[in-house]
Length: 456
Image (cartoon, rainbow, N blue to C red):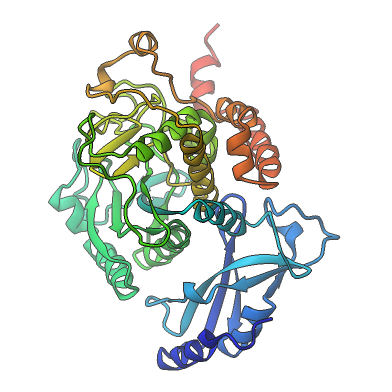
């Protein structure tokens, strides 16, 4: 126990200055859902030294049963996050310990393990995530509708539309004001390509910080939306005829000491401004893309966002804005990986519903495998892949992304690099996700009734 940590005294003073009465001690389960205990502010030191206790058997993916010793969630002092929308309460991200040892089934503990390995190689992993989400309301029959109290968000192509944005301005301002108060560096918000869909962007950071922030962002969006009689959902595809929600990942490796971006090379012969290290990292990501898909798009519903490559499939606006093939290119949104500017890449496959700790651990491990083995990603694609069919892509040697959770799980199970990135969580992940797929596959939905009930 570190009772002499100088940060404790400073933080106690800050709690007093910020008039914090309660602490949310928070971690995530295997799915990325936030789990918390509410602790009086007077319990700061115990929450840091020994942690708040949880029964692991009550939580998905913790590798425990009802007989197991307590999970002790120890707060990370650097994650102090006052809740501007709930005065007097602050959140701390926590890591799980059992009998005084880091619990390997804790997603945050696991991400720290992979980041430490990268740091031992001289790298830090900088990441920005762009969360897309819908605002919806629940109807009396259990269905959902887009939240649109002013009845103005009904365009076929609503992206960036002023009326659609202004109808949600109160919600967006509340979110932005909160994030700005937290110092996250919000730089833009917009109405996305689907009706009632939005995105808020904040500055990139170290992967652990970004995972913490995405987790808190989803927590906060849910609470703020309630005040507007709405539900903020990060379900990837809540409507069959609208664009889905991603959490596009922007990334680069930096020098662990100086912070210099190691992906930049202005003399890049491919003209993208990317270094050899950057291309090798990318090569690893592309090689392991099918297995990564299972972790970055971990629900049945994710694959209704990633379907096919046709421009109009599943989107009344005309485009899905979601890739279907394992590819990279220049500043080109039809690719899995685009290069928006020299020195960093953006992966457009990642789902809004991912567990960011697991997704980023898998991603970094795949990239480092590319660096270790000098994997060449090949030449960039510069065309419109929405116009290319499966036959053409196969002839060009460009593989298709998994088209179902079941297919992605097969790739994950067969990929030792991505499995190792999750440590012992990998077995729990496979077991729970196989169960999820079987449960889904056993359902009979309305479409099947309409299609087959009187077909013969």
